[in-house]
Amino acid sequence: MSADVDFPSLRILVIEDEAFMRRLILRVLYELGVTHTFEAENGSEGLTQIKTLSGKLDLIICDLEMPVISGLKFIEGLRKGIACKNSVDLPVIILTGHSDEENIQKAVKLGIQGFLVKPISSAALQKRIISAVGAPIIKPV
Image: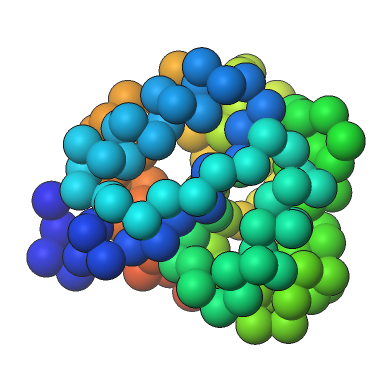
């Protein structure tokens, strides 16, 4: 674990439409020491959670392909301040079931801090969190 990131103090929102995968990610986060987690089944619920938690999140882990509002649309709304103005710069890690390069490039242009291909490993998630929390937010072009 990195001395730069205090995992127990992190507040992370997991947005994933598959219940099994969401529970798996939450369990891995708990094993990494993250105790403050929130969850949503799709981008719409994610935006609602962000409004509710206004300013109380450190990171979002978001699936790319979801019903209602996709991961790309969610990030676009987040970066435009639709959820709340102080969440515009929240770091985002995208999850995808396949390495769809075109959608990942779109997500990068929207200002994500990293991506993981499912199934995730604890080591890969830990590495991405360390990188994302310490990375500067790249403003969308």
